[in-house]
Every structure is written in structure tokens, then in C-alpha cells.
Image 1 (cartoon, rainbow, N blue to C red):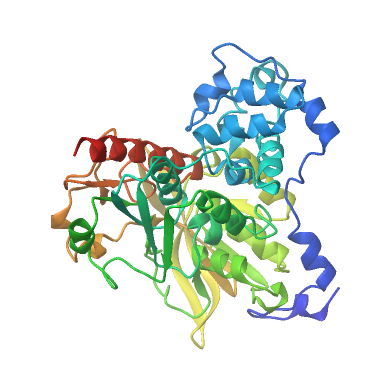
Image 2: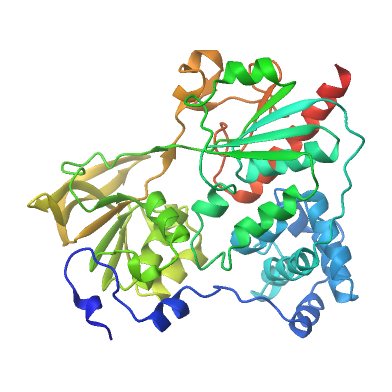
Amino acid sequence: MPEGQFREGIAGGRLSADQYADNFSDLHPPLDHHEALVESDRCYFCYDAPCMNACPTSIDIPLFIRQISTGNPIGSAKTIFDQNILGGMCARVCPTETLCEEVCVREVAEGKPVQIGRLQRYATDIAMAENKQFYPRATPTGKTVAVVGAGPAGLAAAHRLARHGHDVTILEARPKAGGLNEYGIAAYKSVDNFAQAEVEYVTAIGGIDIQNGKALGRDYQLSDLIRNYDAVFLGMGLGGVNALRADGEDADGVTNAVEFIAELRQASDLASLPVGRRVVVIGGGMTAIDAAVQSKLLGAEEVTICYRRGQEHMNASEFEQDLAAANGVTIRHWLQPKRVIAEGGKVSGIELEYTALTGDKLAGTGETLTLTADQVFKAIGQSFVPAALNGSSAAIELEAGRIKVDAEGRTSLANVWAGGDCIFGGDDLTVSAVAQGRDAAESMHRSLMQG
């Protein structure tokens, strides 16, 4: 075992090159041809299938599985892409265990669902490898649409708008397109630069121009877009990070988990990524699990997730919690951060307070616990930053701090739609963002063709 693993403080190079490669290999390796046929044979092809009803994009799951079972993976991929053009990434990152697979008749009867996600990956991977494009562009309409953000919602909206013949310009603040698919997904869930391959596949339809390094409120204003384009779609996601609200959280070694995951995803050399020997992650969602597991895979000796409520309240699925445990991560419940302990400006520990529910209200009990740590990750959610909307939230109606939209994704501003995590009701799922972008695009198309 490399000496780096025992080095105190935040350091890189804790593991050997082979260990890094093994730790960050594909979490769910793809099914081969025989495995896909065997798995597809397990499907009952239910009428009014519960799995289809549980899918936010309403993919015809029994149909695409039947197409695999009859030796037609290309037709299967089209069935998937008809509803979800980012079906390849969703097959990798969707919490299928709490969506389609949870309600699978096989799961209910036997406790072993059809592996819908892996079958979806099997079909979409074949189509993408062959660059099979199913959707020719319609005759150009002469209408122009600006899309803010090249994440799942923005890409889905752009593709559907391009299909209808509109010219789409995507303005993306980061150096690469993909949004959370590129910057926010654990590295072992999306290997081999898949997020960029998917962006290229989606934009191959034509009529989509992506401009990177263009941030709303810095490089252009919403009023500019409204003036210069026939319609606007806002899909910029969430830019703010919730604070720990604990004393000393500015100490060196307290890090935003989202930034840590993004840095890991963009790293060409995993050994160059520094990680603590004893890591504490504050939070209970997917981001907390991803940060914790990846810390362990980078060579951290002790990793502990602390969550302020009970296991049953965690946003992370049971599968994700089990994944953390399998990788040696300890999950502790009913603890909230009280004080980050620092020595010489650097994190040396964290003091936490036990919590309890009184009715529906969570409160500290006054009893505390101190954990030794040299790195603390904040994974307690992100917030929408409305300041970029022309420097004021007054221009567009918000609800609970996010953009308010109607059932079609329309905002309070004429010719402006929104979708994804930036809207009220967004649920931090790639598949939901895709559905919102797709449906908003259809609404935009109807509006544009009426004008």
C-alpha cells in the first residue's frame, strides 16, 4: 500500500495507478449481447406497465425491452430516444431502483426487478456507437431560440426545437456542455468521457450552436435574449451552495462537495487530486454519497457521512446508501454541524450536535460529539441564484426561491420558458430535467408557429 495513504492532512497520490484505475472503473459494466437477451426475457411486457408510469419521461419500457428480446436494439434505442434523447446517460445515472425498477412486477413478486437501466444502456450504446440518427430536421422555420445552460434540460429542449426546424443557440457558462452530466455525476457512473459523446450525439441533428464561457448576468442579460431571439429557455440549474451555518466553516479544508465532484470529473490524473485522511461529509443526498464514496476511492482512510435526520429521511436511495457502506463509508444519523474545529486555520475536527424530532420540528438536543477530520465536505444542497436574471428577481416571478412556471414550462415573462433544477418543483434528477426541457420545447414550438 502506498505511503501516501498514511499521509496526514489533505494530499494526493495515496494509491497506486492500478488502484485508481480499478476504483474508478464502470460501476455497472454494460451487458453483453447474451446477457441482454437473457435479461430482456425476464420482462412480462405488462399492459399499462407500472414501470412506464413511473418513468418521468414516459418511455415505453415494455416495447423497448421486447425489441431487444427480438434482436432489434436499434429499434429499441429509437423507442427510448423518442421520449428521452439523453437516454444513454439516464441509463447510467437514474435512480432506477426508486423509479421504474421499484414498481417492476418482478420486483414486487420476487424482489428482483428486470434490470431496466442496464437494458436501456445496452440499446442506446449500440445506436450511439453506430451514430444512428433517427430524427431529421424539419424545414427551417426561420425562428431563433436562445437556451441558457447546456445541461440535461437545455440539451433536451434544444434537440426537440432543432427537430422542429428552429435555430437554437445554447449559452453555457462553463467550458464544456453537459451540465451536471459532465460536472456533477460521480466518475464511476459515467466513464470514458460519455457525457461529451452524448452532447455530440444530441447536437449532430444540426441547427444547434453551443457557445461556452457565456454566463447570464455577466456576458449578457435576459433582456438581450428577449430582444434578439423569438423565444428563450432558461435551464441554468443551481449556482448557489447552502452554508453549513456552523462556526468556523471558512477554515481551510471545508469544501463544497459539488466542486469536489466537478474537479474529480475533469481530472486527467486522479493521483493529483488531494483528499483528506479523515473525511466528514455533511448531507444526506446523492451528492453526499458521491463525495463520500469518491473520497474513499481516492484513498481516504476514514470517511463519515453525518445527516441531521434518520435513515428513512435521506434523499439518497437505499442502493446508494448500501453502495457507500460497501465502500467502507460510515453513515451517522441525527447529527447536525455545530462548529468546525481548526488548528492554524486548517480543519482538525468538527463538533456536531445530536438532533431529535418533536412532532414535525427538528431541534438540537444540546448533546454534542466531536469527530477528528482534516477535510469536511458540504453536501447540504444548492440554491438558485436569481441575481443573474437581469440583476433582479423582480423581472421574473419566483416561487420558494426558484423560477415559477406553469404546466408547460412558461414563466411570468412572455416568450420565456424554463426547466430543470432552476424551476420550482425541480427534483435534481437528470430524467426529470429532460422531460421538462422536452415538454417546454413542444410548448415553445406551438407558440412560435402561431406567431
